[in-house]
Image 1 (tube, helix red, strand yellow):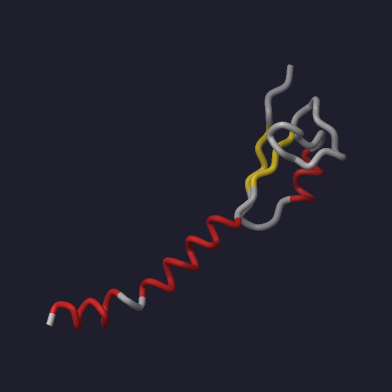
Image 2 (tube, rainbow, N blue to C red; image 1 turned 60 degrees about the vertical axis):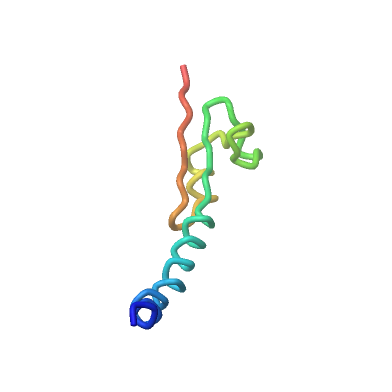
Length: 70
């Protein structure tokens, strides 16, 4: 009987958890630095040079990191 309860109560959550995992995995991270360039790809190694460029690249759920300056 317990196996039957698992399939009735637990199994419907599997697709929900899969959707949440995909949503978290697709969130992007963008980096902005005073020494960066807006022609850079916005990675940690090659950050954007302006907050505006980071905002343009970002979509819902993304994070724009601001690196320190002088």
